[in-house]
Length: 466
Image (cartoon, rainbow, N blue to C red; front, side, top):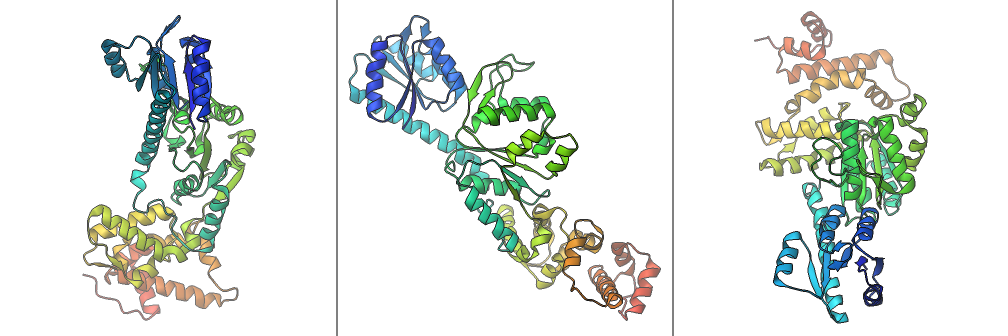
């Protein structure tokens, strides 16, 4: 049922209309004139405005602009005893939804309200769907059946249907926005808007205007009032990515919204009620930033109601074959080319890489391979960046070393293990370089004389450099 703002200076007329609308289950908020209606529009959400045309403090048509400013999808129905062609033309130009002519019958009111409510629902749903178009074709699917991903899915299924604020943590490229969208899709707000913003992409001033909106004349260049993202996400979900980059003043304003449920546009002191489910994400350690005095402790506890950590790709490499397969299909559709296959040797090579850029980096590697590979079956050397970086990344990076170490048995022959690792790395470098020792040496970060020695040491047949 709809939340309706009913505007008329005659209390008797408001009672008649409120009774008709109440019988159908609608919630009615009454206003005695244009000024009072504008105040209500600025502070409360509505699905429909029904207003008398002629009132002591102005015309009902003037509320069309106020309604549009509050919510672009909000329809206004004019009630008038002076319906003329001129008024009809003017109303259509200014954006009124329909007329109800006095005297009216109850069924006429019900029919107009029904059509207006259906139109509002369709417009809002279309806005939500337009925002989701780029995610069609499986982009929103969380791929993987590893234990870490099963835990993520289980937490989404438990938290998604609630209104709880979720703090999504994880390294860059792990898919934090995908997790946020999955939470939204599993919630009662799924048919409403999902609005995402990267806090690191804006200066403090621009982020304030982006989130909370501004009034006309609030600053140089503000030639019209603008709805903020909190208002755009009303009854839906707002996803704040990289919230750890938010300046202290913005942190205070965000905390105010979470406490009161009100947003205040730049250039005004009038609060506006919003009903928004907030999801936030960061790649930073917010607890440490709190200890360092860079993030408000009270805000931290407000947004970290439910923490959800997204695992890096190196901790779920058993998902790699499925991820590569899905990404190949998706990239091939986008490039309008046949989807190639991946050889076991290429998958084995990729599985030795630490993936500091996580799934985002994997997608880039797959896309590059789809474009440049000379055959329909991708080989190990079709992923040169991954292979070149894996030699140093898995063993030397802070991110990759623990995962490599964890894969080793508890008891090993250290000398033999190190020699075997070195032998395999040298052999792979020679294979990917086409047997050219100078290229293989560069990929390993050693000299030409070093690789010649190691080839002799391990009995690997070198090919004469060309």
